Amino acid sequence: MIRLLVLATFVVILNETILINAIPRLMRALSITEQTAQWLSTAFMLTMAAVIPITGWFLQRVSTRTAYATAMGLFLLGTALAAVAPSFEVLLGARIVQASGTAVMMPLLMTTLMQVVPQAQRGRVMGNVTLAISVAPAMGPAVSGVILQFGSWRLLFAVVLPIAALIAWRGLKQLQNVGEPQAGTIDWFSVATAAIGFGGLVYGLSRFEGGDTGVAAAIVAAGLTTIAVFVLRQLSLQKRGTPLMDLRTLRHRTYAVALVLMAVAFMAMLGSMILLPLYLQNLRGLNELQAGLLVMPGGLAMGLLGPVVGRLFDRFGGRVLVIPGAVGITLALAGFTQITMTTPYWQLLGLHALLMVSLAATFTPVFTLGLGSLPPHLYSYGSSILSTLQQVFAAIGTALVITVMSARADALRSTGTTEALAALDGMRLAFVISAVLSVAVVVTALLLPARANGTGETEGSDRMTAHL
Image (cartoon, rainbow, N blue to C red; front, side):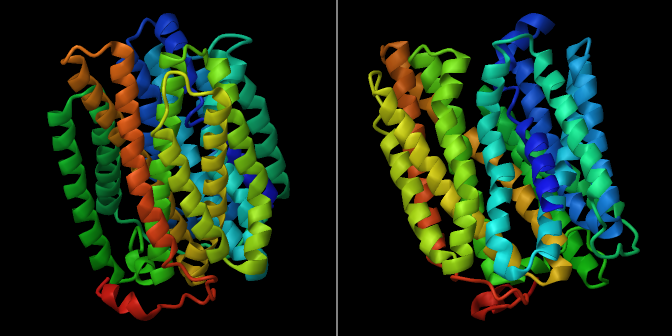
């Protein structure tokens, strides 16, 4: 059952980044600008950020099979519509439908895993989950680069559709319900503030990429204000036992520390995913396929090491993996700050592989420790919050590196520096910022325990957040 959910999650998350390499073709085929084409990726991320906060409540109100059928049904509908979309508007709507299904699948996988897998085996199984949640977005550009060599952008969806349909059919045939759905009403004010707040925050962050900093800052501020209203509403609803997102998960110290670590680690990963293809294609002259193939070994290594890391976690605990992994992330990003116009490709491949392997050593134990520290009735809320923050901090990481890179490059161009050298120095500064931020991953890793006791413990410093 977990294997089927992992396969389904891998396929649906892969589509979050699969259009990155197809932007030039989409611009020509649909007669749209680059800024318009970017909306196909931005809308996917926006929808994820808006829908995921609701999934914690949703998963507690429907059966496992119903949640799976909803997720895969929406994804298949969106994929089929995208494959035959006659216009940009239809394709954009199809991406939103796709993302709605993906938003349900991610928390469903982690919630089901925590309910059916014994604590002693969670590391091994969570290692497979790492493949779906972390490797899929990293592999998206590489997979699309290969597929685009054989046909138009429509092939990206035509290839995925039968694979997703087969997985959906097998899942509905074999999947069993886990737990009992709980009756309850939904607070529509919470739904609205969650969608507007988290969606607005991600949208505002995406606007920084276009250089429209004034409008972007205003939208981000409005999004954060709405999120604050959402949080206050949840604290009020918790007194009656009917929150849309149960923030009592944050009382558990290990879970809260894991959230911080995952947020910063995702910023580092997504930042490098944006910068490295720009460097390889714009400055080194590689095409989409060549750039995709260069970063593919790192993504494959990350996926293949997931189960190994999981078994090591089950045997030795989390600290012996997370701390070296966090140090490796910092070292890899520090190495990228030294790139030049002639850096050997083998060195770039090695740095990227080190980053991916270090992230693999970090993600699996942190997922397992964080969710394992919660009591069972908070699993769905914990996975929902974790998935939401992944989307938000992925957007923050992308906006940060693009803004820093562009500002530095513009400043150098105004002094007469050549276009290529200005862009290179901007990229190096963006990598410096990512490397500095990754130090927080190392510090946070030192705060994690070796194991969670699985009983929803609230450790010493939890009293600091007891007001939640």
